[in-house]
Amino acid sequence: MAHKVIILYRLYMPYYFLGTFTEYPYFRDIRIIQGVSCPNCGVKTDKWLQGRKAFQCTKCGCSIPLTKGTVMEHSKLSLRTWFYAMHLMTSIKQVLSAKEVQHQLRIEQYPPVWLMMMKLRNIMGKRDSIYQLSDEVELDEAFFPIRIPEEARGEKIKRGAGSQQQAKVLVIVESKPVDTVLQQYLCEATEQSIRKASKLAKKAERQSIGKVVHYIKMFVIDNLSADTLDKIVRKHIDKDTVIVSDGSSSHINFEGYFKGYERHVESNVDSVVKTHLPWVHVVIGRCRSGIAAIHGEVDKQFLQLYLNEFCWKFNRRFFKDSCDPKYDLFDRLVKIAAIYTSDIKWRDYYLPDDEIV
Image (tube, rainbow, N blue to C red):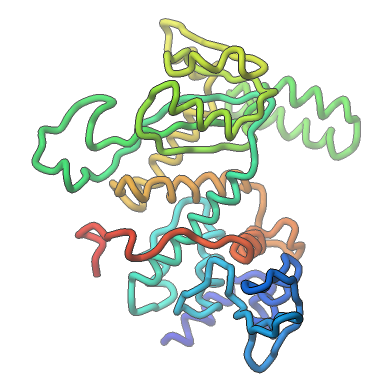
């Protein structure tokens, strides 16, 4: 039965899973390109020991396992299992359940699959954290449903922003007015740019949204104070940026630090959302409904990891399985897995009662 399942998935695998693909040479080549450093002396090496399936330091002679210094380090799951899970995660737009991956890959134990996916979500966030948003960004806060913490059970449920059933999330979206982007395309005056302009004009008319979205970032925050938001915003938004928001009192420090700050305080909230903050609310709605549909109410300590996955996929939404690795989402995730380690350990977390198997 397991053999049949693997064959079934091979029909949908990228080109490198077909034919004579073997995971070790594939990942070995990626590691050599990224650079393999000796954990003892720090010297880079590309010497490969085929029998041990490991690298060897050319200076001190120590053996370096293929997964050393990667997200797969210390994992008992096979390299191919990791690759299958990465392919499943990059094949759909929404966040993916570890239960579903366990079922699809016919893995008997749930905890290793859960930990594997949490580690992948962790490195997705690490990768996106190295980039800053720029030009013009929409910024707003949102509330996501979460499972009531163990220490708060039995207490009276609060309403509003202080509810134990909600987590505060800062949402930042890089966007530009459609007219500005169209003008840029037309100024380039190339065949490709004119084709993009025509496609964008039709899409904007169909969606009735006056802005074009680029990249997004989402962060779970403990409170809505100005100091909390300042630390995140100054780290992840370029100083030469115009911030557009609803004029919350938490944003008072934005003006003067960034290139521009537009406060839109109007009695008609729908007008502000539709005209000035359209994409930040589209992103909030899609992410919140996507997580709720797959996971329901999640534990607050895991929420950031699910946000990482949603943002990473959204920011690369135009990528797809391709014979050109430059545009292949699976290939991108494997390369990230080769250079990032995960901070997540099984003992640091606990599973809610309804997820224990």
